[in-house]
Amino acid sequence: MIINNKLWKSDRKLTKKLVASIKLFFIYLVSWKQKKQINTIDLNRYNTLLIRTYNAFGDAIITTPVIREIKLKYPHIQIDVIASNKNQDFFKKNKYINTVYTLSHKPSIKEILNILSLCRNRYPIFIDLWGKISFIQLLTFRLFNSEIYLAVSPEESFREKYFIGTEDLRMYDIVFGKDLKIHQRDRMLDLLNICSIIPVTKEYDIFYSNQDKMKATSFVKQYGSSKLIGFSYHGSRDENTLSKIDATNIIKNILLKNNEIVIILFYEEDYFNEATEIIQAVNNQNCILSYKTNSFFEFTALVDKCDTIISVGTATLHIASTFNKNIIAIYPNTQYYRNFDPFSKRKTSLVFVKDIKNISYEQYLKISNNIE
Image (tube, rainbow, N blue to C red; front, side):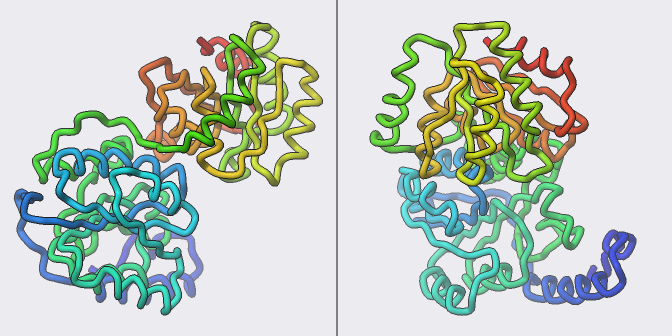
């Protein structure tokens, strides 16, 4: 069905609705095919499969259980992935993955022709873990000419452009994870059922080098037996970033209750001056600025050295989940955020805020009270 009622009932301008409808027509056109009736997939019959992953680092972490569990159950299978230029190194370090291809969000013709030359008629099974709908990318995937196309239904944030999900397209023989209220990790793992795979564990995988580990170890060694808290006050967007005042007050309140704690303030390179101002405002020797982390893996190694992680950013929370840290997450209580809840074998606390730019004193207390 090409006419999309949700699109036409939206508050977009008429011209934008028309443009989106035209794009939808071509999306349905390139994604049409006769679906296969599949009850089970015997992966013993296949030697290779290709997985499309997320574009960002944090979301990429969530895909790792699926990749690992397939490889552990069927070690003969070569698992290759399509990543982004941004997070390709993350997947290249994953020991369960053989080859990493890259595909931009808006790929050039040259890039498309290159990936087609590498992937066309090579992969009998294509698995789309991201599910973000793009005409160019859908066309590219169709031209891979895979025997079976599988997908995971995308979360709400990736439906806003066309108000459709992968389950609305005929391109995919089976779409898993249609219950959007379930954690994104579990919706991905849902596709293992058809392959007769029972997950050994649902934990995430991150592999970083000994060099990264040594740098982090050297940094925290100076603080001896102090309990280390990593604090990430900056989210991926300004809307989920704490104000300098709230970040400062949260740190002060924690240190007021426990003088044996050392808080490491994480920062992104562009926000070094702002983070320095927070350190100066706290004015406590037990609050220090992180060293400059030049890669995702350097940052991961530092997170791994902390006892507790406090964060507004889901990427940092996914890293903390990987290493089973005591986790305190600060974010809005919306279904979108709850789909990415952190987890740990240790204590995990969620501090919900209506307005992340206006944290209350009661919420300061809740954060400090949940530190182990």
